[in-house]
Image 1: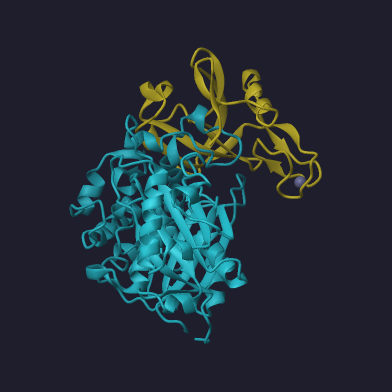
Image 2 (image 1 turned 90 degrees about the vertical axis):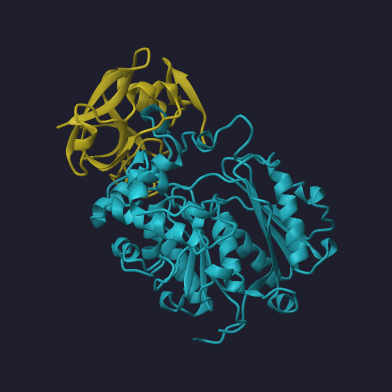
Length: 139
Length: 391
Ligand SMILES: [Zn+2]
């Protein structure tokens, strides 16, 4: 478990130096993930060292925002009031073309039409009381 | 098979009362199971010199604290600790107790799992409904609305189903097989027959999982007493000899090249246990595995080597794991239809089957594989038990 807070009324992890750049970049319309300069491995955000080579020199780096659906679910129940009006809503695991995978909601497509492997592109939408959040849409 | 001596044995086993309602705090259920297991072993409290404790990962240490030894009236222990390896702890406790017995640190170690997720004012849905960091380190479950273990597992199941071209029929077949076993188990909570239609018609919780793809919370405790093989042979119950133990922990790597949903630590755990026991998957008569969700049985059948990769869906659909099938799995109904006590579920059924005391649902039990996992199938522990002291 980790601590949940609310930012602009939206459920969010408590931000710290490991995850804050990723979420802050959403306000600028950027997909920020991590990259190891020593072995050139792209990493999903939240890494404080490179899981491939052990380097502690991991840097934040902007990804293209292009990727594909690696897997997806459709939530028919929720446990947070923020999502109640959205049920049933999807949550997808997106594999960025650089390699890292991110959880996100995919918009602009019916849940019944989601398919693994279909190309998607980052987009940003405000949730809650105006919090910009990374989403994906069909590419 | 090579002639090998067992590592240790389970001499005593018991459970507290089980309920889908609140019947007392976690520690109280634990004490009940501990006392019953000691009596079952034909031992006195003063014979016990070790205590290993396993709490639910979503409970706190306050629920099941170290001073459980005082609550249970145990004194002068030479081994006492909390095993914290999430759902795999139920089996890991037995492994650690076996090692302690082998090393001479303790002679009779009580291992206990206890949980009371259902408390007044908290629904069974809410009990496990929090966002869990099952996808990695970032914590993006909350902003995207991926709540509960069911969602994280559904995401894994979808990938697995896609890769192996499985349908909801394959998941449903798992649920139906478990229910058939549960109907033979007086301890099981689910008492109504379940058909494939019932499964498909049950509401989605998180698509692709219907309600009957998911286990359900139960309050209760499981305890075993681990001793040397020689001690267990002198006990009043049939000894459950531990011949092999293994663990496998693969973590979650959220990037291309890693399919955490399909390749899990269970393979490593199984290989270790088979090598230690000097047997292979073909020698195993039945398996008791952690089955919080239907998909988990399918994947473990493959990873523990009982079915070739990708073949588990058809294997279960053909009824092979159900009563009368070629390879009985989760003969007590598992967590899906029996009772969800995390690693305590496979542990309890593994003991009853190995002892030969499983009544109407008893199957061939010369070699039984018992396996438990934690996280989103990140942490695995298994053991191979037998009623025979030498294989
Ligand atoms: Zn590196």
